[in-house]
Image (cartoon, rainbow, N blue to C red; front, side, top):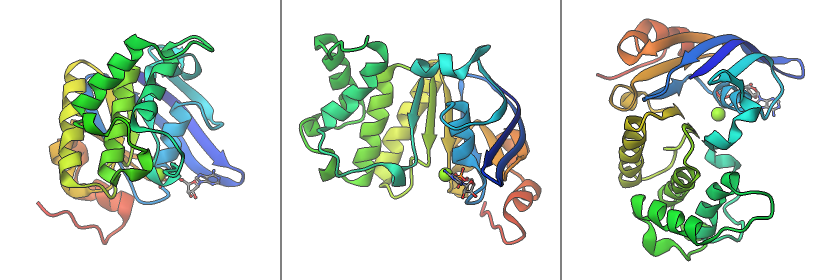
Length: 237
Ligand code: ADP
Ligand code: MG
């Protein structure tokens, strides 16, 4: 369980998040939506303790900085350098590092986990390719394989479906459903409102503050969407 109390984030003069209070339970897929600049990525980074904030973030009662091994995080794609010279399997193996001691090498046990994860995301044949050769959807699956290898109980994905093909999207959602059934907590920043009801158990609507949070049925309403996006919002049914 993740408990967030009175979370505030400033970027110099700009307030990005105001008094966020949330209690997120494991065993579900939680979506987070909100307009550009709403602070969605910022909220994830605050939970991960990679930006300064005031307030409290507790994961299973502990400060998140003591818990990072147990959190898998895929950042928003625009921030990742695809020209970095690394193969698919090396990229996935990075997920094993949180479980290794300093200077310990990736061994045969870890490589087996890498192979299994690549099989799950249906990319075994791509193991020795450079990541720069992949399509957007394949690359997103590689990043999910890296999360699988990490065997974390908390999985945060920041806009994983932007610019990817529908086959990749389906493979990823099926795996996330599996992980949910294993009792993990999955938090996904998302922009496509048409998929909200299909994909998520719970929904956070954010615009610098929490507009709504709860079961999708209760939170995904015209009224709440208007509060977050303004009057021009349209959701088809
Ligand atoms: P979202 O992910 O919902 O689009 P972000 O969390 O990226 O929103 O950003 C929230 C606000 O904080 C935006 O106004 C953005 O410009 C600002 N911001 C984000 N990161 C930084 C940063 N490193 N320095 C200064 N301002 C930032
Ligand atoms: Mg963002």
